[in-house]
Image 1 (cartoon, rainbow, N blue to C red):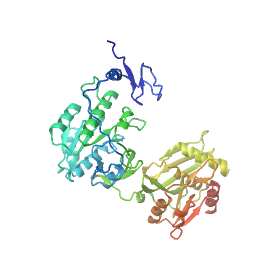
Image 2 (cartoon, one colour):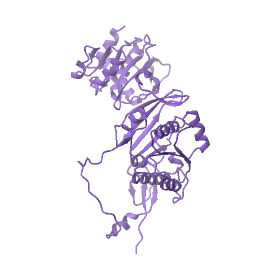
Image 3 (cartoon, rainbow, N blue to C red):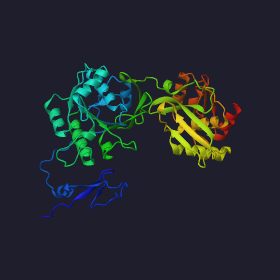
Image 4 (cartoon, rainbow, N blue to C red):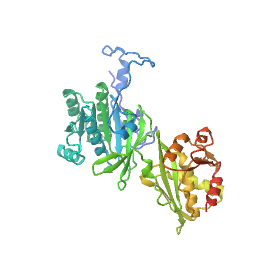
Length: 457
């Protein structure tokens, strides 16, 4: 009887290879192929699946079972995950060390416990006394949640099987968990993948909501194989600067809600507090007489969010001028600079350029192009922009402006915060309904923006 030949599976893309090589031909990653037992060949030869369970077919239009959500009493967290936890779902939370992941999840556990939900908090990094000390600091020491410290997957599954079934289980962190069947240290690719799969399978079979905490690499991605993000239903990133009090919880994958949704929190002495109106935090009208500042009416997920774009353009003494960017994609900035040089006859080749988004927020949507260009031109000409004006619109390589989506939501948020003017590329019915509430100017090209800023001097 012939034995099954071994196969090699890429840890990053899960591609199957019949022989080992230093580089995966599918995704291009190095040293990512690991040896696996080839059970596929043996399974394909077995035509008699006597012990297999019958498969039940379901209809797409079956509405008998509706998805119920578990509310956490934390409005920002519920917003990000789509309105509450879905029973049997698995969530992965990543973020830089010390950003506040454990603090946030401990607070979520306490809030769920007060909502008559059974919560089990599993820590593989801290002792019980350390968790209690943090709970006392957060003023949640009277919470009824259950605590356990363990790094063994088998012990955790045994606890979940023998104790009353919890509604929510938090694993902090998945990199500290180990599967005794795998001969490798915790944190390795095989351990992280196996531990994740075991926990998710048990959680889905018993309709338990599972939250996994994941460490991040130097590149800012969750450590471990990429396949972990495909296993879970929701991937959340906790962002922010340690020297800024504000934290952003961003959804990058969500099977039960919108992606790119954000929740804003403020780090205080009592932990992370929700920020109900984040737009008021990221704009500052105190420096209205200074050049290089513009206000961008943006959209994060389903939420309108106004941010302040800061720019500084100064003469450079270096052979190669500096380009320092914080909160904006550097490639997008290079594109905007190139369009301004080509279409407006402006030379930035002898100037250092610094771009910053106030408050530590990261802006990724192309509609911020117009606000960035306005801030650059304002600093270049040393002309202060109107502090009651917002900008939004996408810049094309030809210098023309493309409309931004959901302009009505952007304008409503701007009016609510006291802005009276808007420069935009949107010329449609949604902007006309705001003509009696604010002065809206429709721009067609970047040269028109350049001309308007010059006239403000």
